[in-house]
Length: 308
Image (cartoon, rainbow, N blue to C red):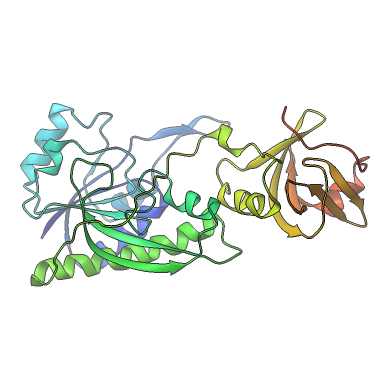
């Protein structure tokens, strides 16, 4: 089966790897263009591109989905199937019409919940106990296509967006190869999405600002959901402080006010309960435990962690 694979970040790597290991005919891999990253502003290749190059697969990196030369190249391949895993751009109708068997998307939620760009982060932010993977037959709507297969995954209390992404990427790879197998043997019957839809918009840097008017539980979920990007951050005397690991503590305090700063404990008031900061990262410094942070600074009860 001639397959074109669309994918970009690390999340998509297990899916491409499982197709290669299964001996599927990957005619081309489409991924985002190389981008400048880091302080040195050096060009960095997408993880999917690295895997494709290692396996001698043709790589296409269009800047625009409607580029005529790109569309002609895709058309010349005559793909039977297109698999899309966290590619990062919306496919045009011209591309969706290309493969005879359609375009499959591996989406990291139990659709119709959490349609959109950041389903993993929003599931944690909203305190969900479970999420999962959906393989979907793509159409021109945003994650509205017919469901092919779904599988659930429990969210642990320690999961961050980073750790949950790793587990979901492996589940997504397994479900993708299972979906293709069922397409081949004719046993797959897509079904319409049903139930209440929700949306998971892209996470921006400004979304990481801590709002102490939330409850301790909401902030606990917030810190986990914002890790690794953009990180949950607040300010102490104008210096940005990132919250890396926290836990909820019974008690009360004024939102954003440091209620305890001794004995290695750093407790901050919220709208309901206290938030214990276990690990944090001061601006331009390494991650450190709260005890080390308190030893190196004159932090007193009554100071505020607030907005800039």
